[in-house]
Image (cartoon, rainbow, N blue to C red; front, side, top):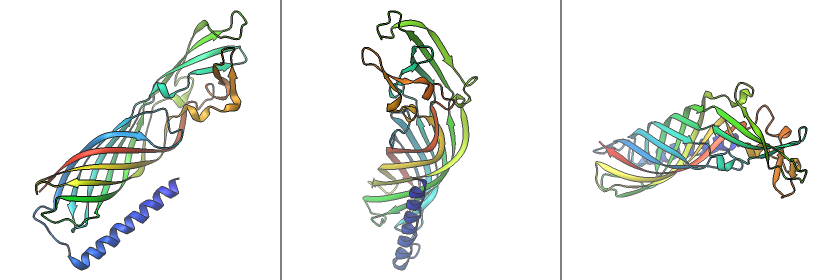
Length: 279
């Protein structure tokens, strides 16, 4: 996966410079009245990939500066924030501990992921722009260095037993709490990582000083830690009670030292709208 992502980046970068060379033969470093841009964009984000964490919709915001090199190429620094809050509805709650013949209902808090990135944005206008252009279609390649934070995870589990022996675990026994004190994997983590944004968009330029755009962006970050409980759940570890409620073997999931944290690449798709000021 990582190899494919960066191969794509190399191909796109090569395409950018190839376009720039072709443009240079026609218009050498063509200058416009306003060749600098400050932009801001925001919009929802969604995880992308199978079993990619217990997260639903997130949020992406970005700001940056672009300097137009010619009618095709612009480049400059950018800062972006990508955040996802843990969604308890994505976590399967029921587990079974055979050694003590009890069932557990899991609840979790924390585990939110935030990625603050500093990148170099390379923008390729697929339709060459000039001072009177109204619409443009473009692509972007944005390699970045990021500061990643995952908040601490706290787990509580309500324990139930089968008092009547009828195969239904409905009798409350008590509540246990799992924290970083006993499971270090649950502790918060801060780390420096890296990755890239790739995207395309449509830009509307009603006036020379201002423009508006809509952009879809794919983001990939090198391995970070995040909640992904489904990764630990296997069909062969299932147990059915008398009411056909599915429980998973706690010794093969909930009680593992690394549960529910995985360390993997993190990918997301954002759909953003933004505004740019040209000067």
